[in-house]
Image 1 (cartoon, rainbow, N blue to C red):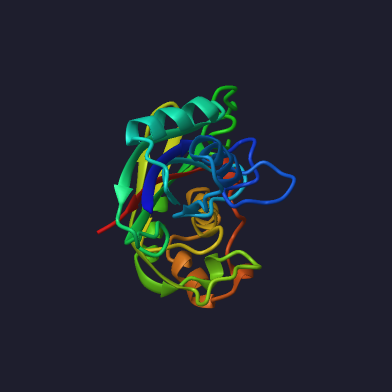
Image 2 (tube, one colour):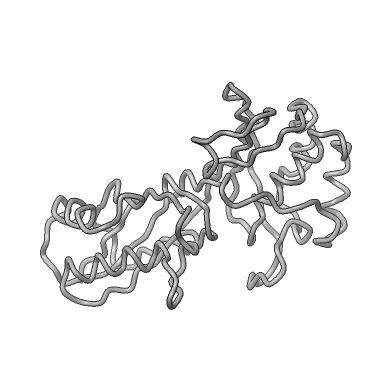
Length: 246
């Protein structure tokens, strides 16, 4: 039995997230259907991250097992032929039999994009959060310092999370000006809670507006209460960029 590892890029706009759900389109469902058509049998598709509805990815990782002898080249091109244009298999490879995209991940990198200007963008409307009030990036960077480390991030976890615990390690937060009002918040960590990066983005935006002091981020985290943190930023600005493995 072969274990095939996929590197996947997708636009999540018209999907109800990664995870399979009945009667609504999902990324996992679309790829699993294409895999079945290609290899001729049902194959369980496991993913590294259960991205939410509207979230995008440049570096999602998934795997499936098959007895099919189709070449790696054939798998890449066969799946891309059958998949819609908003899902792309960027690469594929033979993986060890026990490889698990989720359990074996050492870390993940997400980017949240904010369009900070007076006018919205017709082109970026599905790929950024439009915030018209000017944001002070220096204040945001000062606030982001408080996110670094292994902490209980209960305040930055959405209600209904099935996580066994809320302790996670954030290893880096970088905030960059990409020009024409586009701000990117890059968050790296070993793992993340449900909606955590989106709540981080919402919190740092409040710091950038001057509504929160940078040191208030530490107080928000210390409260261990979701009601202590600001709004959850919209899903359309979030991108899964990379999943790290040994």
